[in-house]
Length: 205
Image (cartoon, rainbow, N blue to C red; front, side, top):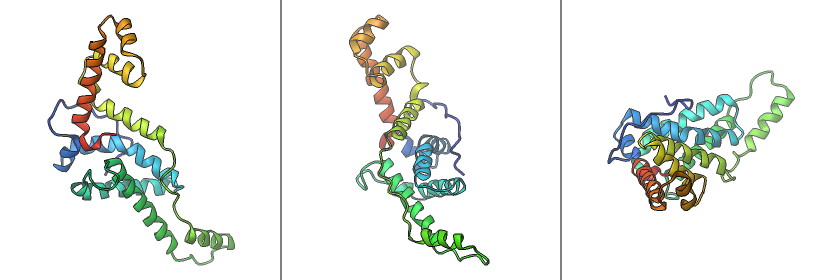
């Protein structure tokens, strides 16, 4: 079962296969990385839909079970063209299924008037749309994607990349502070981004 609290997976070295390709090949380490990478975003979407904690945990498992069962059918030219969009569709479907199940639950004997009103409300409610601003959760996803490849680079290379790509500093300023040429800073950025694309492939946040 997927574990949303899994610790950060360690890098396993450069490979020509993207993470998605390895997941499709039933690579267990790749699957653990996928859950670690996207689990917090799935959890965010589920909690924002107003579910109880226990329901969030159950649907979290259902979502990743659905991903495991249909990962071979994901294609970048469908939905909105991203794995994240495809995953969001699965989450939305599972939330809708949950509300339908709640709608058709039989009323327990001896229920109070308040319980009756609650069930009536649940019978007509729809899960909140998953189209609100989720920029903080997406930023967290991207940072986790970077964490997957960080161990493959020297600390100095990573520092140059981070200051330019994440902290949005000018390459010339970073070069001056680190006593290197601006071209060395740009090369560091290019190397990390290229490796990120290789690792994440169609999963690129």
